[in-house]
Image (tube, rainbow, N blue to C red; front, side, top):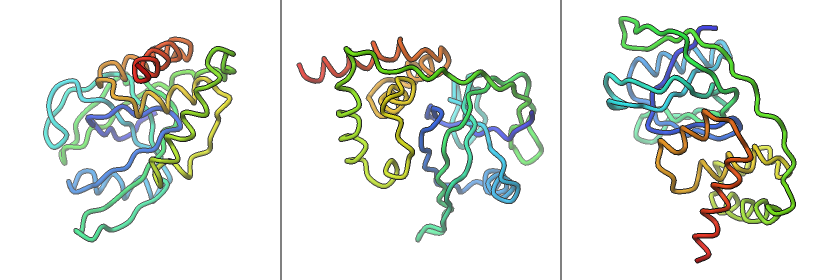
Length: 190
């Protein structure tokens, strides 16, 4: 499967929202093509470089599908996408306009894992946080009984460094994320 790649300083998880402000022509063209063809694009964490120039990325990322777009008052294109499936880049090339195109393989979906009893407080905490975050999270389908979904939302919003978030995306282990999230919640309670 070939998809346009969007290197960013963020880690997108399946089921998570991704707000973007688009101003570079290569990405305006990419968004236009994705909307026209109802096609996803790949989001990859930048390993080295910047969002507006050449960058090297991690190999594992998440497909994103555009669910809304609008013209901002500043003239920039605003886009909201939602994370779909995790993928691994098999090979990639850079087109003449600077857009990276990747040949990817889709990684297996994480299993639906019921929340173990010792983590039953997490959905209540998460629901309150998501409600406070407002518009970006209010339209998400919520799966508060699924450890993979709950921990992915926490990892998105908790103040972990990007490499830790990337590690969580790559290893695809909801049980490991449960331990990370619980440790951070315990530390916050002090």
